[in-house]
Image (cartoon, rainbow, N blue to C red):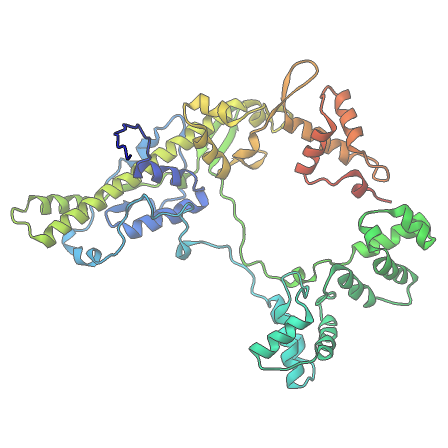
Length: 490
């Protein structure tokens, strides 16, 4: 029997304004300008008075109220110049709840660093192919081989797949021997090692282009041909015994092999995109007092268009309203509300950034004064969230994508958060301090007899840090430091 009943539930939902603020909060400064330009293009009721002075002096915390940025207004053009019909034809109208992407990137407004104009890796190979007298068929096979190389310069497709590609895409029917012969031609191109199918072949191609009469080259070729696995695993004792050579000879052979390029494709590649970090905050030391400054690009001078406000009042007071006029009133009101929401979200973002960074600065005050990693206190997201009275997720959004410029460098805020480790005296220290000591111990070790994780754990215990070998291994891997056997040198 079907039973129906009524239930009353209390649910918490985010409003469109809250969603917009959350998305703006995690946008870094380098993307904020593009995000604002995108909003200005989509909402004619929003105006920006700071486009001409984005590089003006920044505001400091807490001497100046962040709200002061948005007080200025100036007259705009008469609203009669605005044609409402141009905008009423739009299919998608701002709703803030679903339209905006997480990063707010605008493809047309992205600013990239200028790069030098030079031939690409593939163009360089094509030019070398053009200089060789070949039949039309061999030339097409060569082009197919060059186009099949990956960015590292390796040919990772099988010969059978290449033959199929030639048949289907270019109507060229080639034999396996013909493709192999053209591959040998490509492998003679510069940079050396190009067209190899694996690392071993890449190294051998480069070694065989050197002086074969040199005994050192001959032994290096033998190592790569017969003992590459032992070489990569640094089993030097086994190599000395198998090749019947001394440690000094092996050292010279290893040095010769290490001079080779394992990724020849990288040598001719053009970097098309530069990674540019723009700090969101600046911390300066003024006679022992830290001063926090917010990047001026985080405080644009936005305001609601006065002409749009007058337009709305004009339409709203009209006594006779037909369907088209009602649509115009609704459209103008929506644009005005959207502009106010966006300005409020920018102001709230600015205040949240300052509040969060100010709490982090005071929590790690000794570190920002000295720049010494050993002065970093154990700090988790909850510590800052409790101080500013906000949720942990809000602090996380700020810490994961924002940078601060100090007198000692520019750092991601996330790097200041660390777990606590208790010393033998009962004092809690940051695990970054332990990592710093590990880095120093490994940097000063005898490379012929590198320190194992057990020995590193003993050294830390002598210094008062009671840490297990597994924890040492975890910290070592986090710092991208290989195990002792792979750090060994002759």
